[in-house]
Length: 441
Picture 1: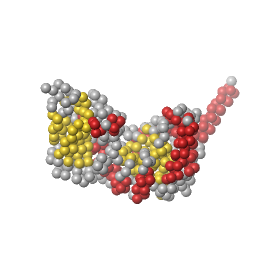
Picture 2: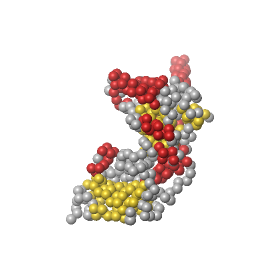
Picture 3: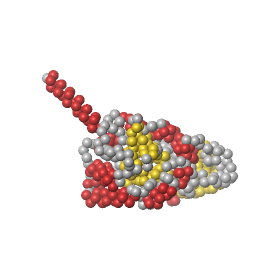
Picture 4: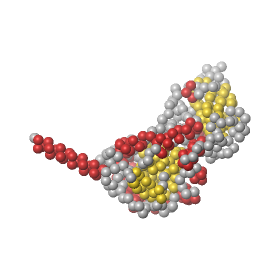
């Protein structure tokens, strides 16, 4: 009996030893310092190299504004759309901006449909091969991002998704040995991170799309490192708190911070979750450009006219490691409706409502106050697809930060958006939801 227990114990120890050794090996990853882009490990820390020089990712995920990125001290743009890739890469070369190119893929949820269809998979591989071969020699390429938020499974059995994903990794490495391959995940799920490490060992680097939980990345990767040899990583999307992470009011409308509060959160998130993590290879702020998500203003570092927000100057301060100059940037201290703030749950039953914008810097003749009233729209889809139809009225003033507007007749939820623009191409934004009651006389 003792002999049997001893044999079981020794077997278990050997299994653990060989499993640990295997999981902490490179498992097919190759370090080649002659490549245009590679990651080395020096003194137990990752270091990214581009064209033989150390490279730290400082930039944004989005589109355009490459001149402005260069002027702010940024060096990298992640693009989601390959339709205008040639023009983007050429402009990026002009401003010495490196580009991470997203290659869109369906998620793991389609492993029994999309990824099990031989014809679809053959066409996919051909498209990826053609894309990589078309642009692999462009000097602006930094890496290929194979899929965004794919929900990688934690499993020891390879399903069709895992098989095709690894085939694509091998294909890209074969066609373009000079650049890295990454994939990005949403949040800091240990199961997804381990799934990537266990099932896609030849991947070069992981990107994290994180917002309010950005400080979780380092401790989670430290935990993963106890089980497997961890991949290098960077922050592929970050910024202010996402619309899915914030409080809502009584009628479930999300409460959006002003651009000034967002700028403050940029600084906190960068210093606590990026700069302090010595193994993080850099970061990309979201969104470098203009888009609708949550509301029409949530993530925008630029507005529709190309004006710069306070977040732009905060990024410039962080990237260049110099103080933020705020004397000439419009900064909103507080937005009120009838002297009430967002947290006050604003119900309106009278015919007019007064909006007031209190500024943190002096109000001058260079400022223009634009106020727009919209029907409330829950979710990014309605804001994105029906923005013109949702708008009810607009007021513009260059003289006063306090104005009245007529309340909509129909009962229901609405939102007022304020944009403060100056003559130097800068803007600040804030918005508030309110609810109209139909008990007016």
